[in-house]
Length: 389
Image (cartoon, helix red, strand yellow):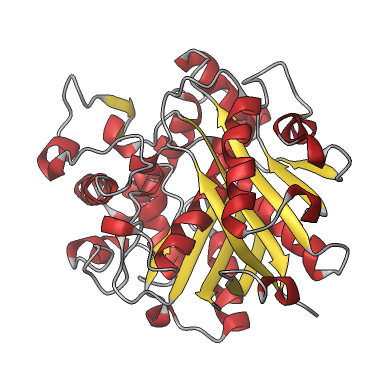
């Protein structure tokens, strides 16, 4: 069976953008990604769009909107995917399945979200769609409250790790200064992130504002091709492994701080690839909240359950550490436009592997790990990537 390769990409800045809607955001990256890959619209066999929406806009049917800026794509099959905060990875993996099945040679993947047009309360309610509303709709703080409760449970079992969360935030904001696409390119420092203040209040205790990712607009795109087609193009990033593992949606029906689905996805991806964690040169992981990154250290195998604090204290995940985590600044600094996030994380990995990451660059990066999750570790996607050419 042929393997799918990433052969091109494009990325808008993330933040509060002037683009009025998802359609205009997708238009910014669709043609640019095709040009970067060295293919034309006539070469595209399938289009896969990741947009969560769920109330950000009354206009749905986003898959049909890509062709509005690329009329040559009007008759190309186009499908929209939605899988909460892992929507972008769902679109990418479906495109890879399409190419690897032989149904097409080239696929365009576009992830986008326009979030800032809604008020903060409206956005909080929309994001609760990624939780189990029957049981979790009344949690104070909306989706941040869901992760605030996860943090509370973690602290009750393993001790207060507020300081470690602040160090994760400070790390990612420092890394994000070097990311030209990042929404928040500012090094706040540990002391600011660790203090509760008027500028850094509790959002959902024990999570402070600096523990929470940003409400963002943005888009990113990838072009995927089969191996034969990729050989004729300028670049190719391949997947040593990719795994998608789900977990039960309600937090009440599982251990909410185990991230068991994430752990299983990492275990299966490592087994498929024959790669040890120490073989990876960096990881882009889903730090929607700093408590998520802390638990993800444990889920990926960097530390035993309850000992993620050691990763922080020993500097393992720092840019110059044993396994840099989120050299892009992560969602915490880069921003989190839901549908674009999974696509963006893979673009960040590709830039590193092509040695094109500028000041973000991890020296001599050859193997990358990407972890993108939907909801509170419900839909879990792990990619292990390497450069083919």
